Image (cartoon, rainbow, N blue to C red; front, side):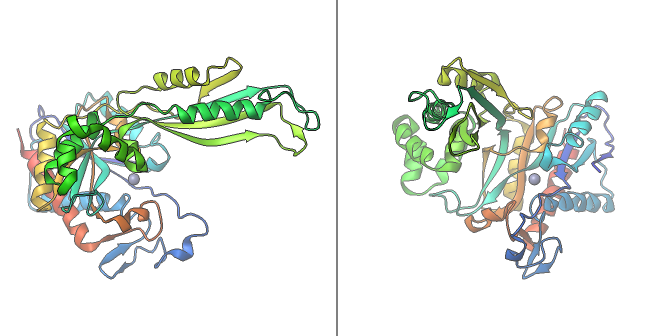
Length: 393
Ligand SMILES: [Zn+2]
């Protein structure tokens, strides 16, 4: 069941804040149960870590937010702004019954939020090349999602007398998919990615600092390097991923139709309609039928970094995690917070979870865990954030 808590502030005119986390978790992939060093749903505490599915995504945030609120309540803290807590129970499957309904309810009540903080980017250590300090990235936008289905029909026949070269359903589909793969949407160090690199650059060592501080000169070289890595490439462009192809069911029959699906993750600034036009133009063949699968979403708006709420999150991170670089970032995956864009212009996606390169596969993977020391930091973070945000003018 999805939950919405309201902690009423003393000043009804002050825009409220919203803390979010989700209660649901992804399953443990069948066949990988045995790879876990503890039972994945035991919540075992061992060797300084809380282990189990959801420890990191997203029960850490959930528990820490509740713990922080309880501490403030126990201390007699009285918020000036209303504090909302929204805990969806279906984030991993789109949030239609949870976050969507909560956002609708708040909109009906004419609530306009000062800011929203939800799960998101992490405090990474040793992940960004050339950066020796831990980096906390605050997601100020998230990418959109669009799957396009391509269908083509051709004359079926026997494989002993195939149709002329290039006219069968499979060759036509192959050629179209090759064109789509060749014609990637244009990338660039712009928008959120640019702001991130410009913020981080002065903290980097060696050539990274020089290159990223002088993009006017090194832009093309840096871009080429970033495009070579899957995760950095995803920050620079709307990505194109060929994910499904279906045609034929017998080795000696030329099929009469072929179908394929291409998944796009949209960069803020690109639109679903624009991408669909791009596919049409690239395929450039009227015999193809093209349509978007349901469940698509536009990229989110970009939340400002000059706002008091971003600055507060930034200060709070540096206070609770001394020595950490804070920079805006782009969220590649989706979060429940995207459903709140109608009632807040300041949506920040950040989980104060510490991660080293070897920890990244634990996310939705095997041996998910969070250290007990880090959990205490999470509580401190939310405690400080709510204390300051709720009292601020
Ligand atoms: Zn999550």
